[in-house]
Image (cartoon, rainbow, N blue to C red; front, side, top):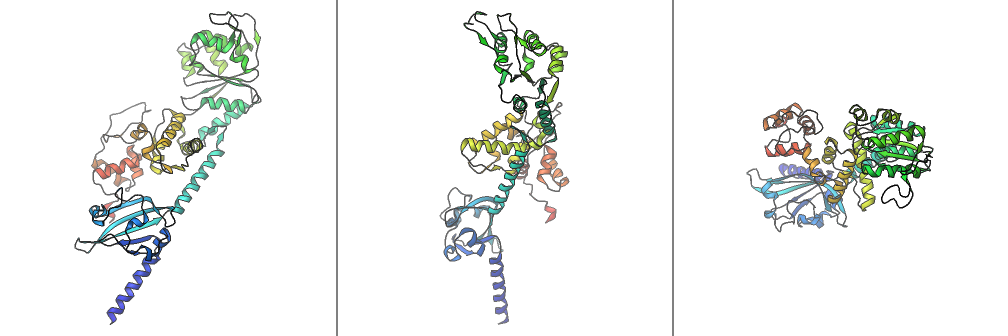
Length: 470
């Protein structure tokens, strides 16, 4: 009698624990029918235990079950051959029809003799976690809005120096040369200087010196009179006259021919121009901003650029750092471009997953901010979820962090490219031990993304946790 009382007591305690758990738990019998359903599952799914018991697990329509369709019997379900599933973030369908974000795990239950007697599944509601994550990302985006000048975004020390220089340049009328790699946003800097200056209500004229043939750029800049050359059927004003009190931005200034360099020097010295085919001098009132991705001083030393013009242009130089030099700006740039693409496409993507953001942070961005913007646009084409994931990112960015032959990659911008060292199972185990089994830390050590480390661990059957901790 005492044994029966003790057994009943233990059963009551077990039921109390089962129904007090914050996570949803349910079990399936060998026919695939739900045999138990705790209180948390009632709250998460909307189905009471009375409604769930005896039903198939297809009741909750989980979005990431093993098969593409729920099998008709539990023996056909892959959980029976795999014995367990790794925890996955997915969705179940609530009784009222809306999706609930969850983390789901499943494993078979045996009788101690390796005979399967059922399946137990756990469900964690991560709705609040996702909401907090989205709020944090929104806060980060708002923070990014604070660290911007016009359309230039950044909170790094390097960009704060640029912002300070832009404001100083805007307060003066000095000639400015903006130097930086292609894709860093040199035209945005020139635009910010103009629209924060006293000339902001007047024209801002952009001329790409590398896009115009040498025989046309003189006419483009200075204008021409009728009959100046074959095809000149009427008078035409040039960009300097068109600017009329505003700003002329000469992009890729290093591409100008020596002849045009001489004429530009006169503009800077005398503030006057002559149209092609005319000897009359015309006074102009314009501010000149220039930009180049080349080292102008090196061009002077090589004899490709006039030294006197160089010193006229570099009255106020601004260096625009590459994206590699300001990696801490990558997250707010990603958020900015996602927000812009949401407006453009009508999608509602909230951000990037952790592994995707790690790829963005690790990639050297030879094309700088322009390449990052293109990568986000590429991801929007593929992304069908609420967050950009690794497989949505352009393949060249993914490959940069995951060398297919298992060798340790060398950054593309490295001045020295030593022979690559083969990553072996033994070497990976050594790194795991040194980094206390922290995969992200190992990835940084060997130059691979965290997903790439997991991939190799799975390939070489290395346990995810330190076996010595068991």
